[in-house]
Image (cartoon, rainbow, N blue to C red; front, side):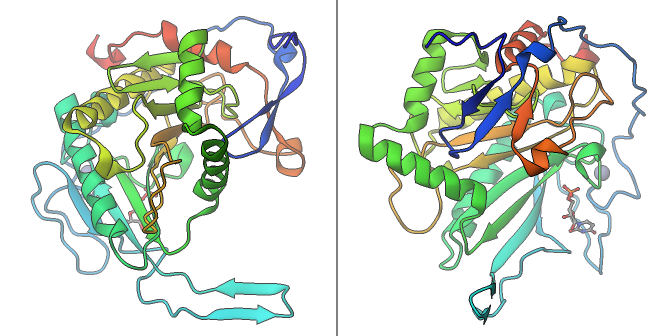
Length: 347
Ligand code: H2U
Ligand code: ZN
């Protein structure tokens, strides 16, 4: 209760995954300097004839995109998972174990505009993307052999994103992947013990403390979680405990579009560049069970550390020992809070 969290090395518990993060706040006594360098960003055209995601253009194989005007979804031409994989196992002495995995991968274009990103899109356009996510979750999740629908976005070259055209992906598969699996166990245990969702109580606590909240609206709150690992990691939590994309009311879908706009604008304003991240949703599994324990949320995992070019690398101690960070989540939250809600390009 008395540990001075801003001065001494300590470990923080992530109640969603059961993992710990080593925090070393004494290493960053210096205050935040903000943007320190100008990184030239090339102007992109609204339409790029060579882009495989722009309307009307051709993709790998013989596929051709329609002249779409809002959002567009297609089966990934290089899908990591395939629907007709045999349900067979491989086992050698219980040490070499493998299982066939069925799945479907799709790509979602957020807008026909090659030069825009989520923070630059109007909230009404982001709402179209929300509606598409809901539809994909519903459609893929209702398939007998699909037990989890992972929706995500890889943004920026630094994240290995292959194309600047604003897009995300869906990987729907038979097995609940590791990250949501950990969250399932911990949310279940918490719900069993308390009769409320873990994130319901966590959110209430964060609202009372009011140190790490960086954005909010009627339906969603964005927090730098107490256990954040990435320097500017955030979690978007719904105020109402619900589990699935398909549980959202119209007003909540509007709220989700708005909160995504708010946090991504702040992100772009940190270094006044298009801020890279991997982000994605953790809705309940689509395994036919009820999941009252599951609380819908979204994670943003941005790799940048202290400038537009300095990335946090997960190496050394972090690969062999434990996740670790220097700057405290509260310091990151203070910085994010202080940033404008107006995108730097439109100022
Ligand atoms: P990322 O840039 O987020 O990695 O994803 C782009 C996806 O687009 C990638 O998974 C797919 C790649 O397989 N793709 C196609 O489906 N068709 C193409 O013509 C090129 C790329
Ligand atoms: Zn494009």
